[in-house]
Amino acid sequence: MIEQHLRDSIHIPRGFDLVSIEADIDPEHITSCETERFELRDPEGYRVRSYSAWMMDDSFFGYFEYDADGVLLDRKTMGFYAATS
Image 1 (cartoon, one colour):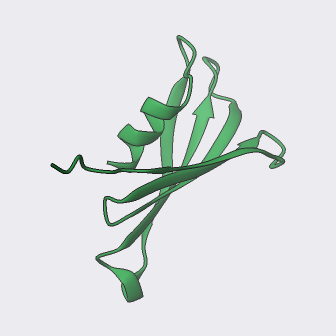
Image 2 (cartoon, rainbow, N blue to C red):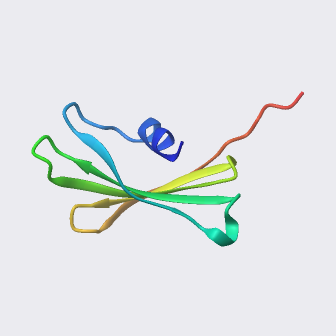
């Protein structure tokens, strides 16, 4: 689910792959917080970006985007809100 939210949030050029490299569920917050790390790789397999993404209770999703050298480029947090009537 984190991967799909990240794919919906970033631009992945044709021929590039988003690869999950690490998933972690915090045992202290097993029902509330998940984190996962991804790499965006070019067609030759070189890392061009990395992402640390997280989701809390299907309420918030966010990520940090880093360049190939590990420099922070961007960060985003989005809330998921259900319509109420």
